[in-house]
Image (cartoon, rainbow, N blue to C red; front, side, top):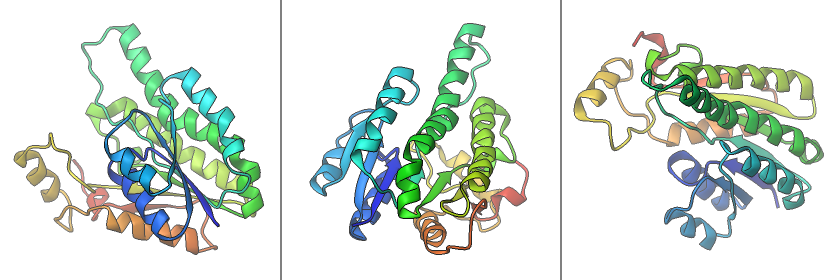
Length: 237
């Protein structure tokens, strides 16, 4: 049985991916930050769930130390955990430092440590890594400065690992655009985003899943990052 490890399975894309891989017959290991009602549904499907708040150094290190015992062979690793919060200029320097540390921990340190500890398992399976980046990594949004900077670092790290681990392990990424609006997005915001998106529609999760399947199945891809954004990266926002 093939094994996949997915971070951030508690909601939205991660939750959907866990379902998809279960349907394909994978053994699914999922990380989540905090307990949610939806997680019981994953448990009933047989998903192995591990709790860890990656912004907390002790929890991240405990998670990483535990991982190798969960699987000796890893076919797919998906770095999906994310912290999408805007910068607050009213914060004190200390608060800003803590905020940036959290962004760095979730988007860069956690993927780095997970990669290193799971390399033997990935190497054994000739596995692949999929990094969920963001179109903001290349075209940063002024209000999300720390988020964009940490995602840009993740995108750069993707290329470094792709080069370092070839040819045994492939590493690729996806840069989603307006996939699913959040509940707090009002109608004005939605209309503005869609007006800036050439394909003029909310993409949904399915296009991202189709791209993940491509990256898993195409064995001649490594070091690439595919935009799944309806063309929004072609415009300025």
